[in-house]
Amino acid sequence: MLYDQFELHQSRIFLGSDCFAEALARCEPSAYSRCFFISQEQVWGFHGQALAEAFAASGVTVSEDHLYFMPDGEQFKSLATFEAIQQWLVDRGADRRSLLVVLGGGVVGDLAGFVAATYMRGMAWLYVPTTLLAQQDASIGGKTAVNLPQGKNLVGQFWEPRAVIVDSAVLGTLPQRQINAGYMEFLKHGMLQGEALYQDALAVPTATDDWAAQMPVLARGVRVKADVVAQDPHEKNQRRLLNLGHTLAHALESYTEYRQFLHGEAVGIGLLYVAMVARRLGSTYAWPGLMEAVVPRLPACDPANWDQTRLLDLTRRDKKGVGGKIAWIIPHRPGDVEIITGIDRAVLAASLEELVAVLGDRVAAVR
Image (cartoon, rainbow, N blue to C red):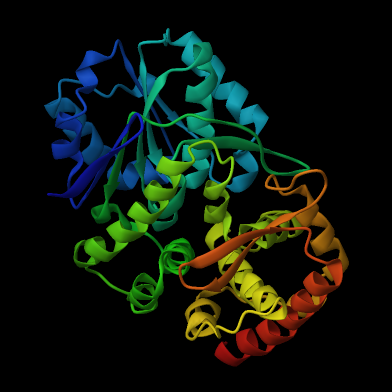
C-alpha cells in the first residue's frame, strides 16, 4: 500500500509498504525499450522475486541475462566495477531508451546511478533502496558517484532517477547493524528540521518488527532531504547542509579503509563531533539525547588509537571545501544549522580530542 508520493524535479518518489506493484504501475516500465537490473545476490534473494512479479504485472519480464550482481562492499564502488557494468550493458544491447533498475543499498545505488548518468550520455534509471540508510539518504536527489583511493565519492554526477520506491517491507530483512546505521541519517534529518522531528527521531524504535507503523515518521525524514534538494539540486549552497556530520564521517571511513564502520555509523560519530565543535564556537544547546541515541548503536571501536592529526588532515579532501578551506556544517540547535568555512584548526583538534575521550568512555560503558 502506498503511504505517500510526490515529485522532485524529474523524479517521482513513492513511499509505502509492500508497494512495488502499485508504484511500478504508475511508472510504466513497459514503455522503455528494455529493462536491465542491477543488484547484489543476497539482496535479490530477499526481494528479487517480489520485484520481478511487480514488473511482470506491468508487462516486463526479468531475464537472467539482464540481471547483474555487484559484489558487496564499499571497496567495489570503484571505477573498475563502473567499467565492468558499462561493458555488460554494451554487450546486451542497452540503448538510450533503456531503463536501468537498481535494487540495493547506497553502494549499489551510487555506482549504478553513475552508470546510468554516463552510459550513452545518460539513460533513465529507477531506484528501489533496500536499506534504511539508502531510503533516508542516497535514494533522494540523484547524487551518484564512485570512490577513488584518495577519498570517497570523488568522481560522480547529479543524475536523478525517474522514480524511487521507498518500501518499508524490505527493512524486515536487514541486520540490526544496518538498521542502526540507517537510523543515523534519519537522526540527522531531525537535527536539520527542528525540535519536533529531532525529538521524534530520538523516540524511533530501531528494534522493531513493524516498519510499516514507522513509515509516517520516516517519511518526514525523506521529505526533509527532498525539500532541501528541491531548493539546491546541484549542491551549490543549501544542499551542503545535508552533509551534517559527513565531513568527519568520510574522513573516518577513509582512515579505517572502509572496514570498521558502516557509513551511517561514521555519520553518527560525525554528528557527535560537530555538536562538540558547535559548543566550542559558542552554541549553548546541549543536544539532549544525542549521545544516548548514537553510542549504543555503534560497533566496538578503540578511538584512543586513532591518529587524530591524520584524521583531521583527511577532512581537507571534503568536496564542500573551497580554495583549500573546509566548509563545516555546524548545528547550533535543531533547525538552526550553519555552513562555516575556515574553522580554526585548534578548535577542530580540541573537539576531536574531546570526542575521542568521551566516545572511548561511552563505548566501553555500553559493551
